[in-house]
Length: 116
Image (cartoon, rainbow, N blue to C red; front, top):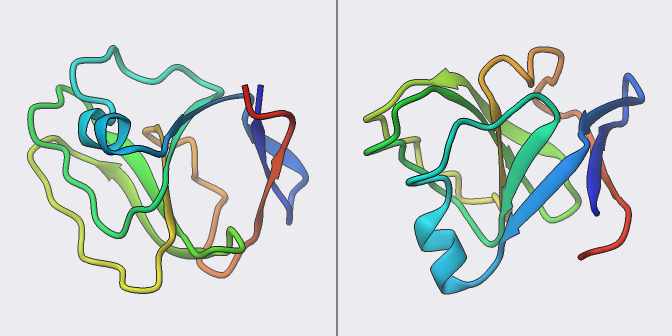
């Protein structure tokens, strides 16, 4: 199971990472799923824009470049919203609302563990 660590604080940001890295998993994202629990996250690759249409809960949305440096953050993005298009983004990390409270633009995240 892969995990994501916040390098600046050495805190484990995501203990149970799911990936959306093909057409179908990216299309579905979190739609039709229960809210993410603490320690869970979804890494969408490639991704430069997201929406929260048809979702019943808020999420934190972290846009990352190819080296997992934070480019943009939407904190507690409510349902029925669309993010800006982040041209330099390679990935988007979706987290439970407020899970990215200590993450700042410019921070580096670290991916660890085996891809299951």
